[in-house]
Structure formats: structure tokens, C-alpha cells
Length: 339
Image 1 (cartoon, rainbow, N blue to C red):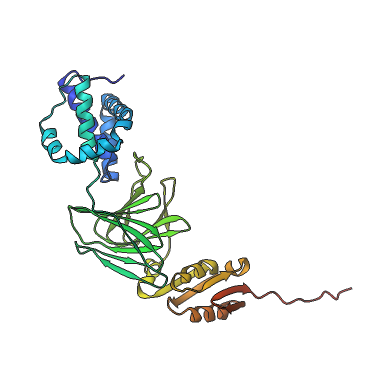
Image 2 (tube, rainbow, N blue to C red):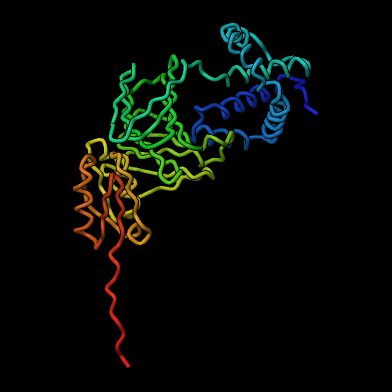
């Protein structure tokens, strides 16, 4: 059963606990705040007790707070709620406390008001640049798809397919978030790229900082929200862990300049990447696909790519009516004549 605060000290702790609950559930909570929350919990057993009670109440109210009609009413009442919340205290009976807690936290967690979502897709061979109203720029690789929502002080972008690169204008009061798979990349004023590689979200930072975390975890353990610094690149694993990757970031985003740079890349992956820029159907057999490829190729010159790979490896390339098949040259048959 939920315990109602009975004195000023308990009121203050309960209010702090509810504020922590709202903050930790928000998209703005970073690793430093989570460390501060851990310190607050360690200050007193009463802090842990009140937080557990507030969280239990919040969880019990999940069917109500997630109901579409409740969300709609809270959105409509947003201006009035803002005025009322400043005048409310925690000196209520259990019922009054529960109502105030629900309203206050729900108000804090109301999703920002966004314009209608628009989906943007690039065709094979097409690279698109999108200029946003705040001066930020999105560059989309070929055969990529994003959805874009604009709010008063925020941008919400979801990469659904392919690769994208973001040059974000510095706006202290604006949030810029990119969702990809189960991960979120939150800009802190920077240039960074996001891609989907083998169904795994990957984020790389050329300048500035980006905070990355798992969008499926409401309460992230300390250390699972990370900041990527300039020059760092990481995969966002489904478990919530961050797997830092090596490699040249300029080479990773060379597609922006019409180039693909491979460094001991499997031929299968290289073929997959260059296929984004051409309508031809390219197939590569397993043996050939396992071969490694290093070099720089133009995205718009498929013939040069096919010629180049044959100079590096013994390959057979058959081209028929826009269908290209790449296979390894079979080894010469040498009969065993030893008796």
C-alpha cells in the first residue's frame, strides 16, 4: 500500500523522489544526472524508500496515464497545468497526493508537440541534402529513408534505412534527436553520422559530442548512457551496451563526396554498399564474397569497380541484361598421376 507523507520532512523527500522519477524518464537525462541520482539515493535510506513508493504508484497508474484520452486531455491542459503546478504543495491526504503526483509527473513527461511526421526517401544513386529552419543540415545517402518531425524547440528524426549525416546548428534550448533501431543519438552541438549496418545502429562523431542510449530502457543503469566524442564511432547493441568501433571516420562518410573507401572489407559488403548507387542486380557467391577488398572507388562508376576487383582477386564477372554475377575463379584441376 502506498504511504502518504505525514510531515514536512517526508513531504520534501517525496517531492524530490517524484522529481527524480520524472527526470529519469525524460529524454534529457544524461549520465551525470544518473550519477547524481545515485548519490541522492545513497544519502539516506528514506530516499530509497520514498522513491520506491513513488515509482510503485506511477507503475500502478500505467493503464490510466497511457490511455489516449488522458494524454489528449493533458496536452490540451498544458498551459493551465503549468500555472497550477507551481502553486501546489505536497500537503495532501493520500488521494490528494496521488492526484498531484500523477499530474505533476505526467506534465513533465508529456511528449513535445510536433508537426505531422513526413517521410523522406532517396532513390538508388541519389544523395539528398535537407536544410532545416534552424540552420542544421541533413545529408542522406542513396537508398535511405528517414522520418522527420519538427517541434517548437526540437527535431525528432528516425533513420529507417541506410545512412544519414547531420550537421547540427548550436541552439542551447533546442533538442535534436535521431532514433535508429533501438538506439537514440542526442546531439550536443556537432557533426555526426548514423547508419544501420547489419541491423545494428552505428553512430560516429566527426565534431562535438553525441549522447547515445537505448530507447527501450526507461531507467538506464549508470554508465549505459554514453557520450561519444569527436573521432569516436560505436554500435548500439540491443542489450543497451555500447560497442566502440575502430576505423577512419572520414572514410566511413566518404559517400558524401561520392566515394566508397574500403579497408579489408569483405567483397560481399563492398558489393552491398555500391549497389545503393546502381539499378543493376549484383550477386556474389559465398567464396568470392569472403575475399577482402581495400581501395577507393567512385560511387557512380560501377564498371570501374568491377574492373578493379578483378585486378585484385581472380574473379569471374558475368553481366547479362542488368544482372551481374561475381564468382571466384575455380582452382585449376591438377590430376594426381602419382602411382
